[in-house]
Image (cartoon, rainbow, N blue to C red; front, top):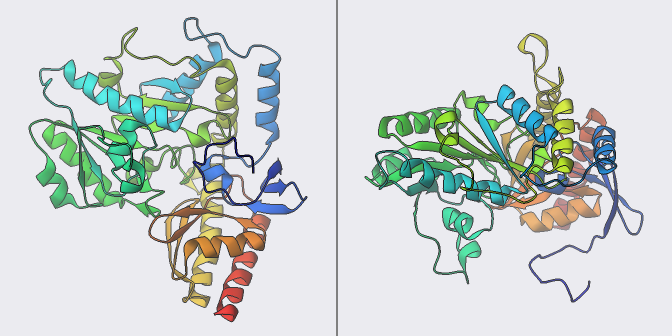
Length: 399
């Protein structure tokens, strides 16, 4: 490894050189079934032909034009997102971190424009992960993220995960919003139960708070719906999104309802590259696939492809947990964002899976994240389950 890269990552010794569908290939020519998916980024696997064609055509036409001029594909992408979601307006960013930061800015700007300008504090939940900007690490509050960056940004009040009594007790005269991930990804693949999300929405309405959701990892089909909050029938005020929207191309978005979006005026925020012609072309191509009939929603409300594959994968993982309770304690998550709560060290388990040709991602609470591409096929699931069985059996034999 080159000494000229800052040592910000504890990289495994795998040189990724090529991707094809659900598979990643290293410099030695070995093929891995990629259920890491760039940490839930590669929504359609590697080099999906629809995305490749869109990017190639746009690259031959226009790369960058600046947000000082109109970008037709950006406008089309915004229209499609609003038509398919709760939102009335969209702002495009380059990443999830930027989307989170602007969402937090919007909270303050919204209340500065109301008759309650003293509201600015935000309630978050323990072990949330919202990115690595100064505001994002303060919102999450995890010591491993804030250490060395003190003093952290003020304005966040954290409460225990899904603790509604603590949430109510934390509300003060200067509280402005509640901010959370519908499913904590880095925090151990812990979903907020739908009844809890609905109660949080009710509490926000009762106290005049904004409900702001971090759907950077859970959005764009990962849970079987366009956004995870739809599974609970909840309508947020602001959503920060990224990862899957660009399927590997840097793109993020902040979606908001009218009352929030109307506080944005020229000069109040900006992005040099957010929603560029290249990014907008890829985002529209991604929507062409995931919004097609049968992908997220089947006919007459039947489960779409993502939900069907998620059911198959979850059933297989539950069987593995039943066969190997000394290795896998619990299967958790929603859709194709699945966590395996381990009884063995999760990173050792991941290394064993990698040796058998399966890539996964770590998470808190000793969890292994299983994140297949959304267009995963039954044969990929069967292959992954076979590898998991082999890995568990190998670990048991070595114990």
